[in-house]
Image (cartoon, rainbow, N blue to C red):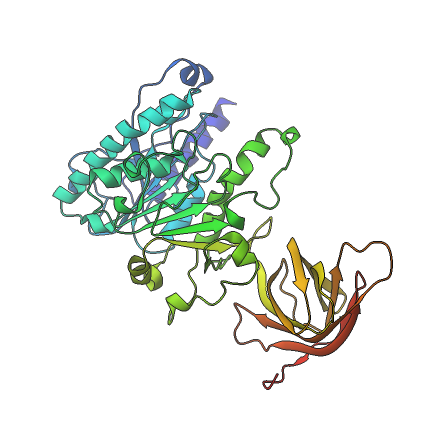
Length: 455
């Protein structure tokens, strides 16, 4: 048994040496605490674990001083700081290795994982909140040392999750908002609701601040706190997350943690999560905010690392809210259509729309039921319709309007025209159909036709 353990240790040392460009030292690990340490007390000790393209799988703890003498730390490169939040489980964040790998694929940079687990892993959340200030002061001192040795503050990007987002904001405030960028992943809400800008993350903390919201009705923070605030599925109640307390810990954490999963997916460039500026989520779902006129000639903003196409526009517009919806699982992206219907029926009808797209034997369905829609004579109704799957080619469309009329005669609804326009695939053709007679609560199917530009 001892021999096999020795072979394992030799293999581990070899891996570390191979990953850290021959420096030949053991990897430095994220702090993992025992239960009694977080239950009793921990003294804050902030560690910085450096990852570069030469040591992606082997973090190296940096000395906070004499940075230019540390061979892997290149002060001429951009530096991203990854900052975790409250850690009641005491274990390292599961997502750190993933974000390091994905950040390294964006550009050549220094990636520093900010390990403040000895301040965050405390059963008393209020103590962890208090520790964010001291951790921010320690990190501020390190960044000032970077600046003294030639690194511009504009090259610094802080990425903070939950409580780590506010920690990043405190660092930015200490540095008078001169750092390049802060990304906040669902900034923590408890003890920050109603806080002044000086007491939480806000746009003045960096030259550019982008914030992703996924749990504003529980562990996340309501309101706008960046130059751009992304609201996934309205910012709360993420698809696929448990709806009852009987699901245990997942019920409390799933929505909040979704911000990290969405950001990882966006860094991987597999999600292409396009967001639309809008005054409210309900207006977005009603299809009132799908043009992104203020951003032209740039496209609608997307969640992710590269914001260069929208940054100047956003700084000019001021604080901007943008919305998008997702599926429950990877790759999270929904397929969006703008549906325009012109109704002829003499008397108004209220209902919800159920739309299916068919390709061969496969189909995908969207139910637009966030409110009852009014269908009346000579009226155009425009809706945002989003599907979980991107089926191509579309060979058939089926449509029904579900009403509350469950007894008595079914009333007819006449559509002069229905038009489906793909929002994020402008090269795809519009799909239309003309003069359709429907009955309430009865599905009707038809083959799409090319749209007549005169209608």
